[in-house]
Length: 304
Image 1 (cartoon, rainbow, N blue to C red):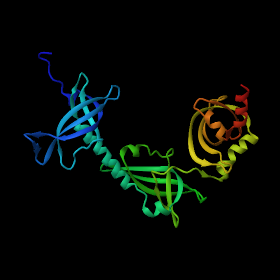
Image 2: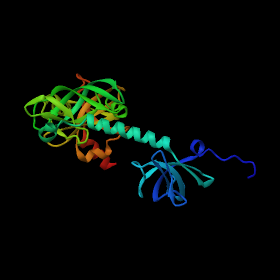
Image 3: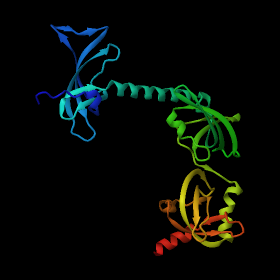
Image 4: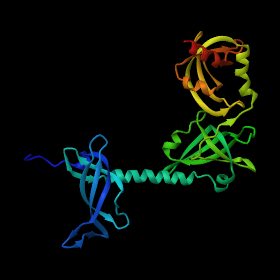
C-alpha cells in the first residue's frame, strides 16, 4: 500500500525456528563478499512457525568464518506474518539461547560426580534436609544436608555436600520435599555427591519406626474414612516390595489433617489421587497413627 511503513521484523515480527536447507557465499562480480574476516552468506531456510504452515525464505547475513551455518542447522528467526519474504535472523534470541546453554554446560561440569564415585560409589537415595543457596556468578552454590539411604542396606545417616546448579535447578531443591540420587564413597560414607543424571533408586527399609505404625493401626485401630489431600513418592519400599508414599489425609469425621507414611500396593496406585476417599483405621489414643485399609477400599470399589 502506498505510504505504508515497512514493519520492523526484529521488533514486531513473529518468532519461529528455521532449518538451513542451502548455503551459498554471496558474490559480486564473481568475488566473495567479506567484511572484517566475516563472510556474507545467502541462506535458504525452511521456517517452521508453531501454528502456521512451514514456508521457504531467503536471508543474507555476515558470519564469522569459524561460525558459519551448515545445511541442517537450526536457529531462531523473526518474520512478517503478512509477508513471508520479510525474514530476519533473531540474533538476540540466539545469543540468549547460547548463554543459557553455556550456563547449563557449566553447571553440568561443576556438578559432575567425581570420577572415583561415578565408577565405584554406592548408589543411594537422598532426601534434602537443609539447603543453603549462594549466588556464584551465573550458577548457584547449594550447600546441602542430605538424609542418605544406600542400596547396600547401610543404616540411614546424614551427610553434607555442595553442588553447583543453574538458578532454575536450584529453585527445585526444597528442604523436606526433594529427593535425589546420591553416590557415596565405599570407604567413607560421609563423602557423598549428588548424581543428577541417574535415576533415583527405590531403597528397601526395615526400620520399625517406619513400618510398624501402619501395621498397628490396621490391627488395633477403629474404622474411619479419609480424603487424600496430597501424596508424594518417597523412593522407599517395604521388604515385601510395596512402595512408601508420604500422604497428607483429612479424616472425614473430624476434619483433622496430617501426614502419614504408608506402603501402597502397586494395584492401588491408579486410585491414589488427590480428593479420593478411602476406608482407614485410626488409633484413637494416638490420633496421628492411621493406615488406609487398601484391601477394604478395593473391595468396596469392586462391589460398587
